[in-house]
Image (cartoon, rainbow over all chains, first blue to last red; front, side, top):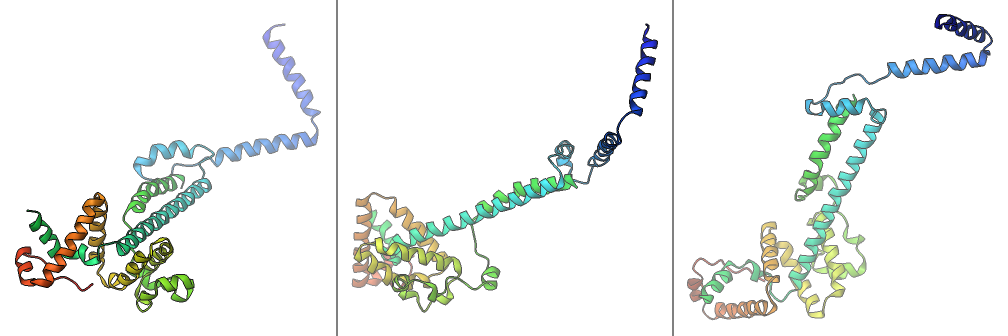
Length: 128
Length: 154
């Protein structure tokens, strides 16, 4: 049996089997084909963006993990982190100032000692 | 769409840390839009007692300064009696200073705090000496100081 003859026999068997496929199986096959075609059509198209971000955007936009919804979530997460960092800086600064003010006001030297430039000049003069 | 979003996200990630690290300046507009907190009535009785010298000025303080004073009040119980007395007696003068004067005073305080204890004690003794010489012959001290400023009331 040469190759041509073998191929004809395989085709005959497949066509005979095709006629015996159940309706449910046929429907499943059709649905799977349609879903594959839909996914192909929905592939992201090149979009407007910054030139320097183009290469990165091209790569990630072809990955199914980097769709618009995921990026939006990532953006919101970043904004949240920025907000938390900002308030940590504000609170830390307020704590530092409170600590300095408390020890300065409770300290041995009065406020004027830190502000009187005459005292500063007097110190310089007396140390000479 | 995806590219534009990526560009926005990347821009934010570069810009945000810079703005977060910048010195925090409370905006006047924000302070006007929102009433300053906490109100005097929201303070605990202990905090009200410590901050009693500021009661009249409390409405003039913005949120950040009020929160700072609340923290100062919370440190009060840990202080020695003489420190507590000094703190309360100086509060009113402190809030009357300009922001620039407070900044200068804090900077000088931090510089002096870094000095060894004996040097700090020496500065304190010199302040007393300066006050005495100022009271004895003010015109002589003015001449010695050559360009010194007018002392402010304590």
